[in-house]
Amino acid sequence: MRPALLIVDVQNAFFKDPASARSLERAVEGINAAIDLFRRRDLPVIVIQHMDEEGGLIPGSDDFAVPGSLNLSPADLRITKTSLNSFHRTELAGKLRALGVDTAIVTGYCAEDCVLATYRGAEEEGFKAMFLRGALASGDPQRLRFVEEIGDLISLGALRAVLG
Image (tube, rainbow, N blue to C red):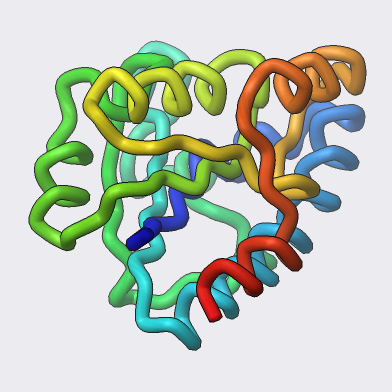
């Protein structure tokens, strides 16, 4: 297994709603732990940001930016998307294939929308997809639990064991 960590839509704009912000803050802790694991194993970390010009999510704006609490590196691959599925009309699948990736570990916001669409998009592109427990966020806890129940879910401990 050669996985990549996909961090979907962890952007400043989505921290404005209090319920989403609480969920995102918890998810960022799990994402940061995964980032550390992936970096120690020299595995790809890919940051995916949603762009919506009408909604003000445009590159260079504060809303489009990722929060400083996310432990990113300038070397992390960046993908900009305009639809729910991070694979739709982006170079993501090609970049993953070029890196020899066969598994997408999907994290981020919003679990029931862009995260789930990206998980399904990964599978449609021929990648194994898994959600990382504790690294998903939503403004609605019931929807978050639902997404974790319908997809393959892996814990950080299990991921550490698999990666050796």
